[in-house]
Image (cartoon, rainbow, N blue to C red; front, side, top):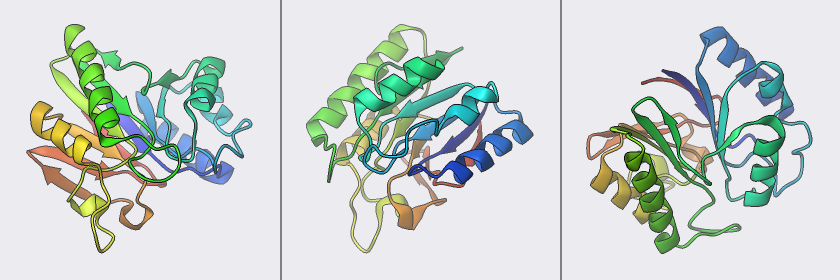
Length: 201
């Protein structure tokens, strides 16, 4: 399975067009958008239509600039997948998601983040997933991906990675670390950023 993962589009339509072209050129099976599609809800109108027009399979989580209702509406309209609502199962791979952030607007507490991931992973494993991909808007705490001079990541995302050992953790949120990768408890963690990353599973 080939995935194009990106984050933090912030209503940039030219960026969307570049990502759609990249997805087509690479013949990806799935596009994952790890939150912050908009600027506090503005700019969503037809922003993601090019993905639909290109016939791409798309899964999304909300970022701290988005609302659940907005993401759910777009997913319903374009037949995309809301990963914050329910895990996506493809073969033996379970793709689980937690949106929003542990700081700022559209806040989730660390307890809520952990509970969301536990619920999603339980459902994925119940449906036969032997391999996991974790998608979080906020990167795990104390890694290269959350370091802006001090660490601002999620302790709950880190704890979930330690417990469940996903093959990959896809995240965004921290613009200063776009494109960086790290390894945490043998899991590959990637801040996919606005330009996007091709990930082979």
